[in-house]
Length: 450
View 1 (tube, rainbow, N blue to C red):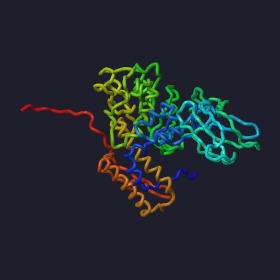
View 2 (tube, helix red, strand yellow; view 1 turned 45 degrees about the vertical axis):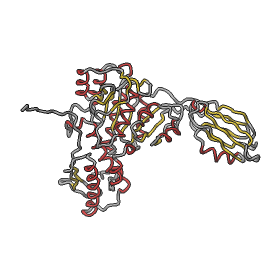
View 3 (cartoon, one colour; view 1 turned 90 degrees about the horizontal axis):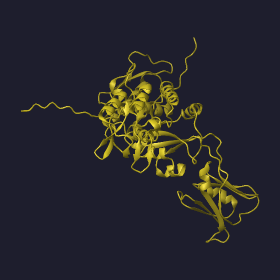
């Protein structure tokens, strides 16, 4: 008989995690995007507007939509790996090159002139012709200092590659950039899934309407949940040409049918004046799910829609909800989330009806993620005996106490050693009993008239 090997499990000190779960920024949404700016094929955390400005120039609509509700955006710029940075080279002297590869770098210009405050030095001025980045001015004595100081630039990098000293030059544009943007094939999506598999995120936004890619993404996330114990929600949408067809949305819900998958049907004009299809609006939904604490429901939350592509009728709404399609409906002059449902409609083993609500599903995922992720930092530090397991039980119980106070779970929770499975060797077995709380969405009143 061969030895069974598994990846190490968790010791948890979870109080900080529990307290952070009521803050929108604690939620993490992974957004793959294509653009002409940003670090290619690499994940970058963007917790606020300043960080998004540096990384994307605030030019990527799906990233901005995902950030609207306060979640930390984990951006992943997808390229075909053919991208090249714009640059300008002065032979035997220096090269000024865009910070990131892509056509956006050709919007930048630089000049070198005598310093207005120190005659022994030069000023290097970098400007953005699109005026998104502020003009930058660097005071330098020589090329070595220029190379060091321009490491702080939001736009360019300076490389000393010769013996000729700095000379004055009028504003000169960077040229020669090559775009890395191209259609992402199903095979390339598999590569992307593999690259981002080890990242920490609560929600994954899939910017593809291809049913085959969506099915592959579902399987990837399912494997990630079952094998790596990393739980995340998935937000999808459909072909923009079918955004006004409720049956197309519902067909997608039926095909996916999982408590961790949310199918968006929202499409139309954003209050910022831009028209977005359901795939783009799915990024906003993903950010909403990640940024809404698990002790809050987003049923009834106002959607920043100015005009929906379709104002769904009552029968369409009822059918959509029954199929597990997330919908926005008109409420006076506003639009709201009709009901925060996921695509789970046909129950599988161990599932029940309330798992079809996003709040309940997110609570389950968050609690398990918190236990596993924090535990990884402390693995192999507890003895596998009653004392060691008691420390683990105490830590998790304190965490659950805070989650109950936050109204994420009911107060009758219990975490204990498993009553049947025996802990031995490097395996420790526990049992968690906790009921995720949902919000009241429907009020039924029997009025007995006196």
